Length: 287
Image (cartoon, rainbow, N blue to C red; front, top):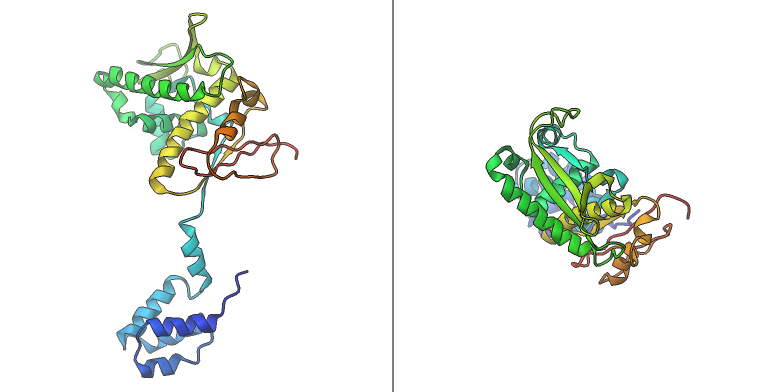
């Protein structure tokens, strides 16, 4: 509980309001801000300074603690949670995703894919025209290359992987919603074996890591625009990402600039973006 000298708050409010001496005298006996607000409301619209002060105090419910809350609110961090359910899907129905977005029924995997679209500056509506397909495909693959380059700084198990995108019409043999409208296919190309496989059939650690970086790229952009602290809770699929490659996500922690975000976590590591917005990782499990 914040200790506040309300009498001093009342004195300061009256001093700043430039009220007539008679009005100040009539309310000077108020010991709390709530009492001051009631007295000002009773005075009415004359003098106008009293009405203005009553309105000002009323905005924070005559509770001086609200002043502290309002002052600190803009500095409070935003929290984001990323887990196994946030991994991008291998096939996406564009009309279905549009419908879920408009109905506010997006799941975590949908939000990750939309984060990738925002990262490249594309909108779902652009997929409605076949004239945009090649440009959108190129934009998505350029973004995936950028994300992959970042990923392979920390993932050395297999650097012969790349993410590819393809756009197709409805698949008559598929189950809804893939049997209607435009479909987007996300695939992993393995240059070593010269094959491609659906994105969600690749090793769970790789697709988790790529999906996270796609999501994280958009979060970094938002954070740099809003200058707001960001706390990202990562629930990776068991110990897989850290044990894949040279250090995995713990390497991100070691390379992170700025202050760290300590906590009592299971197999904990922290991730920080280049703007030094603090991020903390949490893992379900024991201490």
